[in-house]
Amino acid sequence: MSTTRQHAIVIGGSMAGMLTAQVLSSYFEKVTIIDRDQFPEEAEIRDGVPQARHLHVLLAKGLEIVERLFPGIEAEMIANGATTQVWGQDTTMFMERGWMPSFESEMKTHGISRMVLEWLVRKRIRANNKITLTERTIVKRLVTTDDKQRVIGVETQMKGETTTRIVEANLVADASGRSSNAPEWLTGLGYEQVKETVVNSFLGYASRWYKRPPTFPADKKMITIQSLPPKYLSGGVIMEVENGECIVTLAGVNRNYPPTDEVGFLEFTRNLLSPAIYDIIRDAEPLSKVFGYQRTENRIRHYERFNRWPDGFLVLGDAACAFNPIYGQGMTTAAMEAEALGKLLNEYTGRSTAGMTKVFQTRLAKVIETPWLMATSEDLRYPATEGEAPNWRIRFVQQYIQRIIAIMPDYPEVADTFLHVMNLVQPPTQLFRPGILIKVIISLFSKKKAANPQSAIPSTLIHPQS
Ligand SMILES: Cc1cc2nc3c(=O)[nH]c(=O)nc-3n(C[C@H](O)[C@H](O)[C@H](O)COP(=O)(O)OP(=O)(O)OC[C@H]3O[C@@H](n4cnc5c(N)ncnc54)[C@H](O)[C@@H]3O)c2cc1C
Image (cartoon, rainbow, N blue to C red; front, side):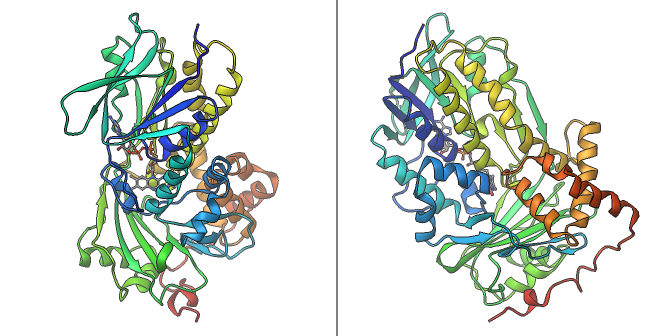
C-alpha cells in the first residue's frame, strides 16, 4: 500500500486551493496547483472568482490560521493598506433594538479587499519553491488505477488547445469551488451520486465601491445594518478597505434582490432598518458601477456518506460545502479544513494512506457543523427560504439567538461573546454560559420596545467626528 508523498495536485488556485497547497507542501515533495485562469500579476479581478468584487471579511479565526500558514502575512496586509478593525470599537451594527454598544474587545480583523488578500496569499504561494502554479489549464477528469479504487492523477487541457495530458500524483485535492465537477467525475468512475443538503434563502448581493466619504465616521471601519426576519428582508454593510476606498454591499433575502442601477441601489440603502449607510454614501464619490451576485445558497455535498471512496482523492472548500456569504464563513471554513487536512497527514505519516481521504471527508463534515448550523438556522427564519423545515434543535437555536441579539444593546459582554462566536473563535456553547443564560431568561420577562430606526442613529453616524 502506498505511503509515497512525492506529488500532490490541487484543482483550483483560489483561497481554498492555496491554503490547501500550503499545508500539503509540508508533507509532499512537490505540490501543483492547477487553475483555468491566468492569475493577474497585480491585485485584480479574474474570471474564476467574480465574487471578489463584493465585500469579503476574513473572520478572526481565518486570520489566525492564515497567519499561522504564512507567518507575517498580517503585517503585509496592513502594509498594503488594510485597515484594522477592533471589534466593538471600529465596527458597529444596527439591530432590532438599536446600535450595538461600544466595548473593549481584543478581537480584530482587517478591512481588505478580496483581490488584495488573494494576491498577497498568491505571492506567498509563488515564493514557496515546493509549489508550482499551472495556469490557463482546465482539469477535465480524474485518472485512476484500473480498478478505479485509487486516484493517481488528472487529465488536463490548456485553454485554447485541443490536446490533453495526464499529470500523475499521489494525492489530488479538488478545491474548484461551487462549480466543481467532482460529482460527475465520481459517477463516471462508478461511484455513487453525491447527496446534497441545500438551504436557499435566495439572497442577492449588490456592491459598489466608493471613495471613503467624509460622512463615514472617522472612528468606524465597518458599519452593518442587520436584516430582521421575517419583516426586514434586507441588510447592508459599509467597510473601509485599502487606498482610502470603501465597499458598500447590500443584501436582500427571499428574492428581494437589491437593484444594480444607481438610483435603485441608493433607494434600497435608504430603506434598510436604519438609513445610516444611505446618509454616509448619498453624496459619496462612486469608484465603480454596481455589481450584482445571486448564487448564494448553502450547499453541502455529503462525500462523507459514500460507502466507497477512492483513495488519493479529496474535496474541500466551496466544492464540498458553500455558505450563504452574508455570514462571511467561506474562506475561514476553507482554512479550518486545510488545517484539518494537515493534522490528518501528520497522523498518517509513514503509514499506508489506504482509507485516509475517506477519513478526511468525515472530518470535514465535523469542521463544517458549526458554521453550517449558524448560517442555515438564521436563513431558515426567512419565510420563503427553501430547505428542510427546521427541527427542534434549529428552532431552539433560532429563538435563543434572537434573544441574544435583542439584549446585545444592553450588555456589551453578550455582544462581545456573540461576535467571538460569529468569528468562529469561540464555540456557540459560550452563548449558553450561566452569565449569559441568566440575562436571556431575565429578558424574557422584561418588556422592552423595539428601537425607532430613525431616532436611534447615533449622532456620530450623522455628523462624522473630525
Ligand atoms: C458574493 C460573495 C461574497 C462572499 N463573502 C465572503 C466573506 O465575506 N468571507 C468569506 O470568508 N467568504 C466569503 N465568500 C465565500 C468565498 O468567496 C469562498 O468561500 C472562497 O473563495 C473559497 O472558495 P474556493 O477556493 O473553494 O472556491 P472559489 O473561490 O470559487 O475558486 C475556485 C477556483 O477553481 C478554479 N477552477 C474551477 N474549476 C476548475 C477546473 N475544472 N480546472 C481548473 N481550475 C478550476 C477557478 O478558476 C477558481 O480559481 C463570499 C462568496 C460570495 C459569492
